[in-house]
Length: 312
Image 1: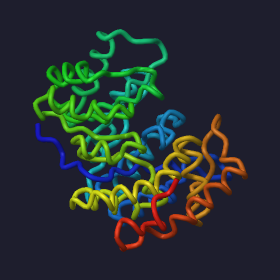
Image 2 (image 1 turned 60 degrees about the vertical axis):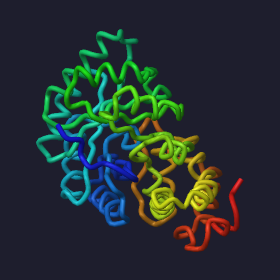
Image 3 (image 1 turned 180 degrees about the horizontal axis):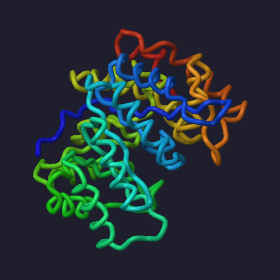
Image 4 (image 1 turned 180 degrees about the vertical axis):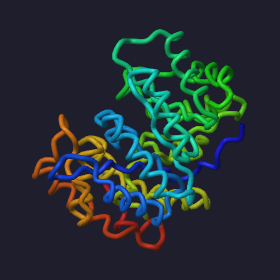
């Protein structure tokens, strides 16, 4: 099974909710998803943790999946996060994603009880077998409590033919090269940890999975372009200027931070869903300042002049 042409900036949309009813706002989701594609994102990945997938009822999840995939409409690849506590629901979501035209599915080890290696292997194999779609295995020990080491991931891929991609969010940059070497290049690797974006690309990552394009798409796209073109100093300067914003959105929780930023930009996506609370007023003002510094995008000057020099 060929790996889909996933590379570059893979953007996570939030799931908008109506401030009046609390229900998913599908019209706002269409706008946001369309904005991500129109801005130049290389792929869109709805229904991850940024998309508050864990807080959606089955019918809501289905509607968000259908809306996002149909809005993208094949203009770029769509990777749908299908993770759930139970294998049964994860399989149902995978089949729903396939039915709606997703290009790939992403699976996190979302657990309550600590699972054994055999239980994890059975879960991933069962989900992968539910469709013919390529599978992106998602390792995020910070949210899932499960750390899938490179040797475990490669062993799983050897047994699951359509497990062709790995999203690695541990922040351990050495794992990108280890995954590539241990799999003899059969696995494509993607970075989900914002601070190590450039280190990941320089260690062989094919793409950067991030919610940042919801608010600052040009910064992310220019950073990727600079790195691809061998303009390392410019890429470094872009990341230095972008880093305070990246640390902020991760540190304050992606759903609430991205939604606060969208509201500041006049593109409201409503509140996060309880138990999450909106970003407090003081932090919202900090975010306003950070977005103000970044403006509408990086200037075209040389790397040394980006943002008046590297940000601290």
